[in-house]
Image 1 (cartoon, one colour):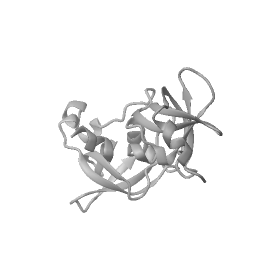
Image 2 (image 1 turned 90 degrees about the horizontal axis):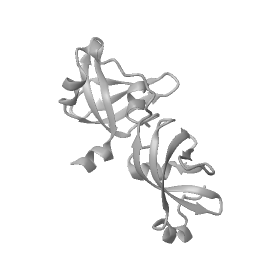
Image 3 (image 1 turned 135 degrees about the horizontal axis):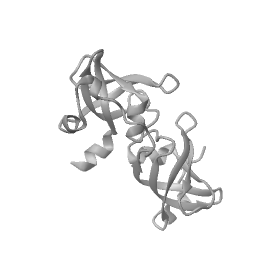
Length: 183
């Protein structure tokens, strides 16, 4: 498969239009998905390499994105991801069971972590926080609230971790690169 930006397209990437829209679907195992622009038109191809340049290997269906789009011989393609906002219609994740409220959680430090494994079909997986030997439970609803959908083994994340009744669990997850950019 050719890359999203072929050599002849590189010069036109700077001239790409900025578009806002919704992720129609994204499948990391296939390496692509599509975005529906707010202003209409044909679906826009979102390739995993473009998403990885933003710091994520997946994005939740229904997430809002702001992207740079260029026209190619094969149609509209995302050339750069500028922002990802999680889907608005997700139910809140209940962290109160672990004795934390949103205010307390916001004061918890983001911890550097890597995905140990994640199974989208089962809806959960585990991650390892650097310097901690215990696994951290990673639920799909927490990922979706962060605009993520299907993290890959070894992917770097930043997580707010709480100690629940059954052990450590991720209460907030972010792509590592977005946290690094904030500092």
